Length: 348
Image (cartoon, rainbow, N blue to C red; front, side):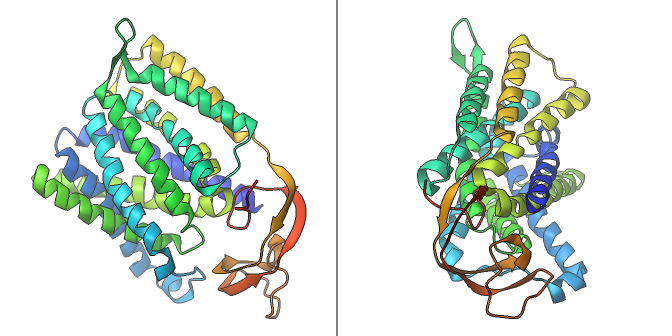
């Protein structure tokens, strides 16, 4: 059941982020790309703050763990990467069509998975390796501007750079995923938004009609704020690599909107790349992982319940509903199908 919730959160996050590329393509004609990047994240931070202020019940009855100084390195890296990624993306969008940029977003799966494996030791199964290869191949097809001369599209390369930045950022966020997702989004929104605003003031410009500024912030609230909120909740149960795999729905949604709203042309190479990416995505989502593994003793704080198989030996009286406190897991060895969630980040 928990896995089903996490999958639902990941898909919902993907659908919400899917609207970003085509509608940013429209707004980029009216706003400087650097300024637009700042507005998107500021919209996320302001929107989630307003939701928290208006939701009195959540403020008084939140069972989520708060961020602490221990998470500060990941917070700083998350903000810096979130400043760079949307700038690369929006500059890339300004140089290529929206549907290609949207589909190239699938390269984020490759970047996130490889970084999760190399730096955070997440297990990568055979199907996920094949999927990574297919998605990489499709990304290369979309990156080549002219197959006869093998001329690279600068816009596509910039979009791929944004995927690499978000790949690192996804793995930083993974280490914050057991904490309050609203707090993560608010810090991410204001930190990255203000940082991008400084960059826009130096190298871009901060001018634009009020209507487009408000529209950009509204898009940021939905495509960044709400999307990141559900993404963080999904990472809690699925880990970085698997969450990014489900997040592959986002580029396909962006492609559909680009066709319907922007009336962008469909090329033969694009159709081939689309088919390859669909196959890679299906393989990613069908991967299973089970083996005998050891949970080492660990002390941490996060929202949990006692019926999930990992919180049954607490010192306090059994509580049926979800709650939050600092607790210690004793060492245990068992065998079951699992994902690299907060309790399965072991070595293989």
